[in-house]
Amino acid sequence: MRGVVRHYAGPPLVHALGPIDLELARGAFFAVVGPSGCGKSTLMDVLCGLAKPTSGSVRFEGKELHGEVPDGIGVVFQEDSSLAWLSVRQNIAFGLRLSWLPKREVQDRVEHAIGFMGLSQFAGHYPAQLSGGMRQRVCIARTLVLRPRLILLDEPFGALDQQTRLLMGDELLRLWRETGATVLLITHALDEAAMLSDRVGVMSARPGRFIDVVETGWPRDRDSRVVSDPHFGELTARLWSSLRPESMKTLGRVA
Amino acid sequence: MAGTTPLPARRRRRFDGVALLLVCLVLWQAVASWTNGIAVSPPLVALAYLADLMGQGSFWGHVGATFAAFLMAFVLSAVLGLLLGLVLGVWRFAGEVWEPILAGFYTIPKVTLYPVVLLIAGLGMSAKVAFGVMHGMVPITLLTLASIRNLSPTLLRTARVLRLPPSRIIAWILVPSCLPDITAGLRIGFSLSLLGVLIGEMFSSQRGLGFLLVSGMAQHNVPLTTAIVLLIVVLAIAANTLMLRYLKF
Image 1 (tube, one colour):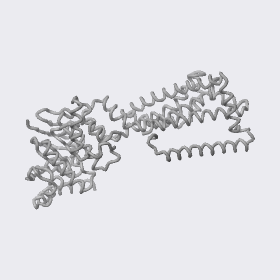
Image 2 (tube, rainbow over the protein chains, first blue to last red):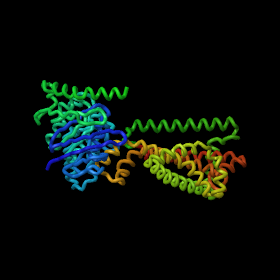
Image 3 (tube, rainbow over the protein chains, first blue to last red):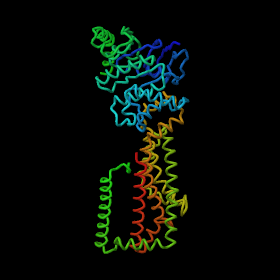
Image 4 (cartoon, rainbow over the protein chains, first blue to last red):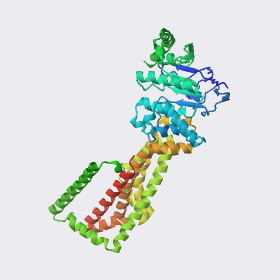
């Protein structure tokens, strides 16, 4: 089985995106960087089926999406989406509330996700008692219990401080290796994209299109220490040189 | 939460409550002495009168009438208010249109509309209930509406990503996240529909606590009015305390 995502989007009233052509091989780690307002989040909505493309089509595992999220895709949002009235454990189990899995299996998956995301000590806490990074882990764990084959993350670490982000990046890599899922990470942080992914797509200013796709060439078994590799600097520099004129355009449009 | 409060804190809170009660009684006594009992009767006189009232069968008829009207008014306010708030909250356009209209209606002193209500609903029970609903429903509607509108879009997107059907979105996301605001609305609606019913009784009824209050005023029966006010105040505070304790999130 090969997970294929393909998509072209034409103009709605605001031409937010495209035309874009993207194919993800199963098990790949793909990052998308782009200037602010370039349609990164629109891209994600279209990819996971929350929004329909104006024209063109999106296919997941060979089946076309029709404005709804198919089984096998997990999404983590930029904003905190933990449920304030549920404990950490209940929040994570919430992802499986609708499933027909046997109770035992649900429990196993939830406990595994709690352990995997390092939340064991906080399983009985409520989101209000946790830091932003912890809450984002809860949301990732809630996606994880669904055992998604494609995980879409929309700037999941955007609200976190730099150190927490590096460590969360390591955990994301570990998650990717151990689950074998395909990961698509949308981010505005060049270093995050350069450090984590196999390939990085650079988007243009609106309407967002891919203007460059960079292969990072990292081994599968990597972590945030690749930042000390000289290649990391080259990669980040190349991303920035592609992105700089686009970011300038965005700023010029605002000013 | 009350059960987990440590004992000294609980004892302290009880002390605070008793102290407040004593201050109120002293103030009450002071006002009564200052006005020579013309405006209010002193606490002991009022309590004795109230005890005497409670021995009479007709008094319980009045209490029952008020209670029945209030219960009907509150249930109607809550059901209509929650439904209307839900519809206007979910259907954004209708909400934008109706919110200022409802808020505007609510600033009208509703007593001025009472003659109209009376002529439409007739004397007695239905007018009291209608008046109670006029007071109680709007705040419940507005608070429910605002709370649904402020629902985080991220939570709704999460629900769609988890492929929850609409009924589950309402039960698992909408209701729990709006519950604190909705209970606040119900508490306000509770006291306002009681207010509406009592005002209704004061103007046009032959039964109920509001009627007793007005007839006490008309006959200058100060112990009667004081006793009725005391009863209403105690009941309202007790109901509010219960709601605060059991509906707090």
